[in-house]
Amino acid sequence: MKLATSFCLLAGLLAFADEPKNLLKPTNKVDSWRWEEHEGAKGEIKADGDALVLRATKITGTDWHLQAVQTGLDLKEGQTYILKFQAKCDSSCLIGVNAMIDQEDWHQVGLGEQLTLGKEYREYEFRFRATDVVSKKNRISVVVGFEPGTVSLKDMTLVEKTE
Image 1 (cartoon, rainbow, N blue to C red):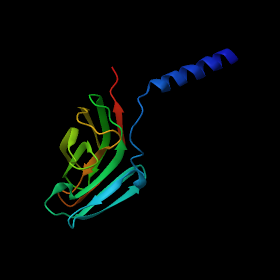
Image 2: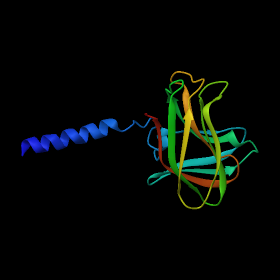
Image 3: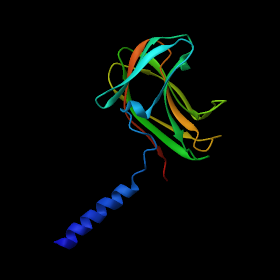
Image 4: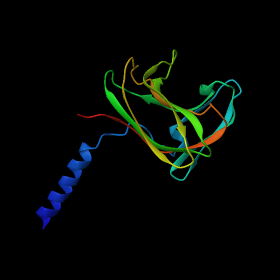
Protein backbone atom coordinates (compact mmCIF):
# COMPACT_ATOMS: atom_id res chain seq x y z
CA MET A 1 0.00 0.00 0.00
CA LYS A 2 2.85 2.41 0.85
CA LEU A 3 4.47 1.72 -2.52
CA ALA A 4 1.25 2.54 -4.40
CA THR A 5 0.81 5.77 -2.41
CA SER A 6 4.42 6.77 -3.04
CA PHE A 7 4.03 6.04 -6.75
CA CYS A 8 0.87 8.18 -6.98
CA LEU A 9 2.57 11.03 -5.13
CA LEU A 10 5.61 10.84 -7.43
CA ALA A 11 3.40 10.79 -10.54
CA GLY A 12 1.56 13.88 -9.30
CA LEU A 13 4.82 15.73 -8.64
CA LEU A 14 6.15 14.84 -12.10
CA ALA A 15 2.93 16.05 -13.76
CA PHE A 16 3.19 19.33 -11.83
CA ALA A 17 6.85 19.72 -12.87
CA ASP A 18 5.77 19.63 -16.54
CA GLU A 19 3.39 22.58 -16.08
CA PRO A 20 4.93 25.79 -17.42
CA LYS A 21 5.54 28.40 -14.73
CA ASN A 22 3.33 31.50 -14.79
CA LEU A 23 5.68 34.49 -15.01
CA LEU A 24 3.01 36.90 -13.78
CA LYS A 25 1.87 37.72 -10.27
CA PRO A 26 -1.77 37.00 -9.31
CA THR A 27 -4.20 38.87 -11.55
CA ASN A 28 -6.66 39.77 -8.79
CA LYS A 29 -4.12 41.34 -6.42
CA VAL A 30 -3.83 45.11 -6.82
CA ASP A 31 -0.25 44.94 -5.50
CA SER A 32 0.67 42.81 -8.54
CA TRP A 33 0.12 45.83 -10.80
CA ARG A 34 1.40 49.35 -11.26
CA TRP A 35 -1.51 51.66 -12.13
CA GLU A 36 -0.51 54.51 -14.44
CA GLU A 37 -2.46 57.74 -15.01
CA HIS A 38 -0.81 60.28 -17.35
CA GLU A 39 -1.59 63.80 -18.58
CA GLY A 40 -4.84 64.20 -16.60
CA ALA A 41 -6.33 60.77 -17.34
CA LYS A 42 -8.18 59.34 -14.35
CA GLY A 43 -9.43 55.95 -13.29
CA GLU A 44 -9.17 53.34 -10.58
CA ILE A 45 -7.88 49.86 -10.00
CA LYS A 46 -9.34 47.42 -7.48
CA ALA A 47 -9.80 43.73 -6.83
CA ASP A 48 -13.25 42.15 -6.91
CA GLY A 49 -13.14 38.47 -5.93
CA ASP A 50 -11.06 36.61 -8.51
CA ALA A 51 -10.93 39.59 -10.89
CA LEU A 52 -8.96 42.79 -11.28
CA VAL A 53 -11.19 45.74 -12.16
CA LEU A 54 -9.82 48.69 -14.16
CA ARG A 55 -12.12 51.69 -14.47
CA ALA A 56 -11.45 54.56 -16.89
CA THR A 57 -13.33 57.65 -15.74
CA LYS A 58 -11.51 60.46 -17.59
CA ILE A 59 -9.68 59.88 -20.85
CA THR A 60 -7.38 62.22 -22.78
CA GLY A 61 -7.53 60.90 -26.34
CA THR A 62 -4.25 59.00 -25.87
CA ASP A 63 -4.95 55.37 -25.01
CA TRP A 64 -1.82 54.61 -22.94
CA HIS A 65 -2.54 57.46 -20.52
CA LEU A 66 -4.46 54.85 -18.46
CA GLN A 67 -2.92 51.43 -18.02
CA ALA A 68 -2.10 48.68 -15.56
CA VAL A 69 1.30 46.99 -15.88
CA GLN A 70 3.16 44.06 -14.39
CA THR A 71 6.86 44.83 -14.39
CA GLY A 72 10.18 43.11 -13.78
CA LEU A 73 9.66 40.34 -16.31
CA ASP A 74 12.84 38.60 -17.42
CA LEU A 75 11.79 37.62 -20.95
CA LYS A 76 14.31 35.71 -23.04
CA GLU A 77 15.33 36.92 -26.48
CA GLY A 78 13.79 34.72 -29.20
CA GLN A 79 11.60 32.76 -26.76
CA THR A 80 7.94 32.23 -27.66
CA TYR A 81 5.45 33.13 -24.93
CA ILE A 82 1.73 32.55 -24.47
CA LEU A 83 -0.37 35.17 -22.70
CA LYS A 84 -3.86 34.02 -21.63
CA PHE A 85 -6.61 35.72 -19.67
CA GLN A 86 -10.33 36.23 -19.40
CA ALA A 87 -11.79 39.71 -19.80
CA LYS A 88 -15.07 41.62 -20.07
CA CYS A 89 -16.30 45.22 -20.03
CA ASP A 90 -19.43 46.84 -18.60
CA SER A 91 -20.29 47.69 -22.20
CA SER A 92 -18.48 46.98 -25.44
CA CYS A 93 -15.05 48.62 -25.14
CA LEU A 94 -11.58 48.59 -26.65
CA ILE A 95 -8.42 47.72 -24.72
CA GLY A 96 -4.78 47.19 -25.62
CA VAL A 97 -2.50 44.38 -24.48
CA ASN A 98 1.25 44.81 -24.87
CA ALA A 99 4.57 43.24 -24.01
CA MET A 100 7.20 45.96 -23.90
CA ILE A 101 10.31 47.12 -22.10
CA ASP A 102 9.77 48.98 -18.84
CA GLN A 103 12.14 51.86 -19.50
CA GLU A 104 12.64 54.53 -22.14
CA ASP A 105 12.01 54.07 -25.18
CA TRP A 106 9.17 51.74 -24.09
CA HIS A 107 9.28 49.71 -27.32
CA GLN A 108 7.18 46.60 -27.78
CA VAL A 109 8.96 43.26 -27.56
CA GLY A 110 6.63 41.13 -29.65
CA LEU A 111 3.06 41.76 -28.52
CA GLY A 112 0.85 44.74 -29.32
CA GLU A 113 -2.83 43.91 -29.72
CA GLN A 114 -6.10 45.75 -29.46
CA LEU A 115 -9.32 43.89 -28.75
CA THR A 116 -12.96 44.74 -28.24
CA LEU A 117 -14.47 43.27 -25.08
CA GLY A 118 -18.10 42.38 -24.59
CA LYS A 119 -20.26 42.20 -21.49
CA GLU A 120 -19.49 38.51 -20.79
CA TYR A 121 -16.14 37.00 -19.89
CA ARG A 122 -14.29 35.62 -22.87
CA GLU A 123 -10.96 33.83 -23.01
CA TYR A 124 -8.12 35.42 -24.95
CA GLU A 125 -4.80 33.91 -25.96
CA PHE A 126 -1.85 35.59 -27.65
CA ARG A 127 1.39 33.95 -28.76
CA PHE A 128 4.42 36.10 -29.40
CA ARG A 129 8.14 35.78 -29.89
CA ALA A 130 10.14 38.08 -27.60
CA THR A 131 12.48 40.38 -29.53
CA ASP A 132 14.71 43.24 -28.41
CA VAL A 133 14.10 42.52 -24.72
CA VAL A 134 15.97 44.05 -21.77
CA SER A 135 17.05 41.73 -18.95
CA LYS A 136 14.54 41.91 -16.06
CA LYS A 137 13.05 45.15 -17.47
CA ASN A 138 10.07 43.92 -19.50
CA ARG A 139 6.39 44.28 -18.76
CA ILE A 140 2.87 43.27 -19.73
CA SER A 141 0.45 46.18 -19.98
CA VAL A 142 -3.32 46.41 -20.21
CA VAL A 143 -4.25 49.75 -21.75
CA VAL A 144 -7.73 51.07 -20.90
CA GLY A 145 -7.57 54.73 -21.92
CA PHE A 146 -9.45 54.38 -25.21
CA GLU A 147 -12.86 55.20 -23.75
CA PRO A 148 -14.59 55.44 -20.35
CA GLY A 149 -15.68 52.07 -18.98
CA THR A 150 -14.95 49.28 -16.55
CA VAL A 151 -12.80 46.31 -17.57
CA SER A 152 -12.57 43.11 -15.53
CA LEU A 153 -9.65 40.70 -15.96
CA LYS A 154 -9.03 37.32 -14.41
CA ASP A 155 -6.76 34.29 -14.65
CA MET A 156 -3.95 36.05 -16.54
CA THR A 157 -0.95 33.83 -17.24
CA LEU A 158 2.26 34.31 -19.18
CA VAL A 159 4.22 31.14 -19.86
CA GLU A 160 7.08 30.06 -22.08
CA LYS A 161 5.90 27.94 -24.98
CA THR A 162 7.50 24.55 -24.74
CA GLU A 163 7.99 22.28 -27.72
